[in-house]
Amino acid sequence: MMAAPAAGGGAEEEKPAEKTEFDLVLKEVPKDKKIAILKVVRTITGLGLKEAKGMVDNPGKLLEAKPKDICEAPAGVGVGELTSPATAAFPR
Image 1: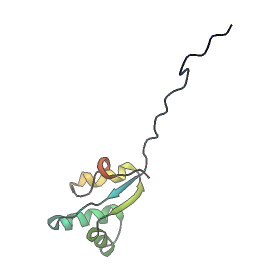
Image 2: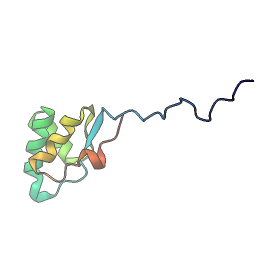
Image 3: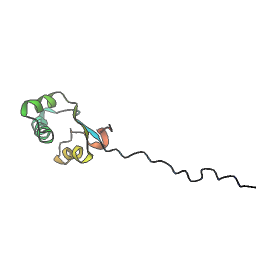
Image 4: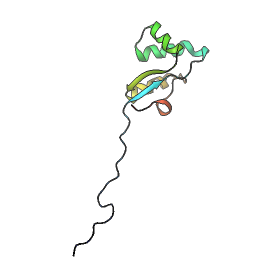
């Protein structure tokens, strides 16, 4: 006579895949910090003044599907209006 296999025998719990791609979102731009935010946007995107100004005037996604370290860089600049990856970086 053979013994029945134990319940859950050997099946390991699958962990969800770690997020590797994030979006960087600009939520709002206070008038008193607009120039500082514009400088940060130009730095992280590599855009010219006109294109970066258009992004700052119309807040929304700045970068899509970028690594976490790139999306965390603006938080280190001290501009709080750029959302941190923990609160606004959405996995792709």
